[in-house]
Amino acid sequence: MKTHHPIQNLNEFRAAAFGFRLPRILLTALDLDFFTVMGTQTWTVKALAKALQASERGVDILCRNLASAGLLKKRDARYCSGTLGRTMLNAHHPEYRGQYLDLMRRQWEDWSLLTDSVKSGRPVDDQGPEDPEYRRSFTWAMHYRSLDPSKQVAKQLNLQTARSLLDVGGGPGTYAMEFLAKNPRLQAKVWDRPPALEVAKEIAGRKKHGHRLSCHAGDFFKDPVPGTFDIMWLSNVIHIYSPRENKALFKKLRAALTPGGRILIQDTFLLDRKGLYPAETNLFAVTMLLFTETGNTYGAKEVKEWLRSAGLAKPKTIRLRRGTGDWEGILIEGTRPYPSMRNTHKP
Ligand SMILES: C[S@@+](CC[C@H](N)C(=O)[O-])C[C@H]1O[C@@H](n2cnc3c(N)ncnc32)[C@H](O)[C@@H]1O
Image (cartoon, rainbow, N blue to C red; front, side, top):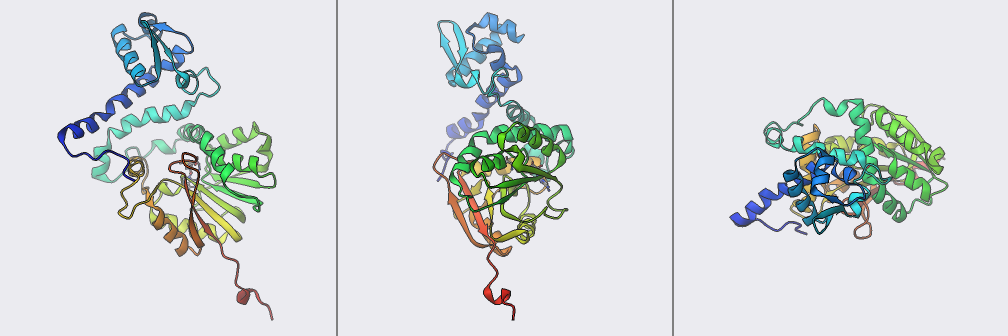
């Protein structure tokens, strides 16, 4: 399960520490709107530098690196974008992943403040994330991030007997929309803060199944659960909060599940006994240190324990097909038990 080559000598340490170089090159390309300017044309360095309003020397070296990373094709002394650059990275293409690329770009500065965050145990920016404009942009970023995995997850999850689903912290509602598309008898509600719901409504308004999606504005810690549901879907939510907060949330959600109803949790989970792997799960915990008050990443086993302690029976892991879904393609499920006959029997 070890996903990185272990660092055991100075050469390996240096190679790992300088691992920031390619990421920085990619983010500089985004800063310059490189792929949008390049579009589908083939360019000399001189013409491209002019179009980018950048130096020929800088663009020459940037192009060589982007080409060796596989993003550009070089023929003679000219460059053009490969498929990714022409589509998802190009603002003129319908598949452009706009705000998700911005989110990646903006993280550079925050990550460079990591030492402060490790010392203080606090996020780097206390105010920014609550700004409504930031929340809308973040929600669009979540939409672009989930477009592909949401389709794969909806295909593999059996929700046939469910009639109601609550997408807790559903943001753009991208998952809820895919569940609706696959399950014609399902109704879904997205529970999130108002700026996120503006985005969810805009997306639902463009879709055939959008009329089966509703939105409920609120804070899932402070406000009551808006109804009872057969399915509670929590995708990328528990990593924002502490174990104590998550356990309290599970307990609250359990009370609003129909008997036999399920909580389904999608996140990045530590999977080994020592709690060290996958390495990506640890890296994501750093993002949570930088951006949240109490967030972290957790072991799959630990999360199942929380479900059990919140009164959810049969906690289990659902493994999606390899290479599909978000993260490592693992979901965790807990079920609200049916009341026992003894409790329901009326004399
Ligand atoms: C990382 S995003 C995940 C969005 C979506 N579930 C997905 O997987 O793409 C987390 C979402 O949870 C929402 N959220 C976090 N804490 C919340 C709270 N206390 N009440 C309501 N929504 C909350 C955020 O506004 C955000 O939209």
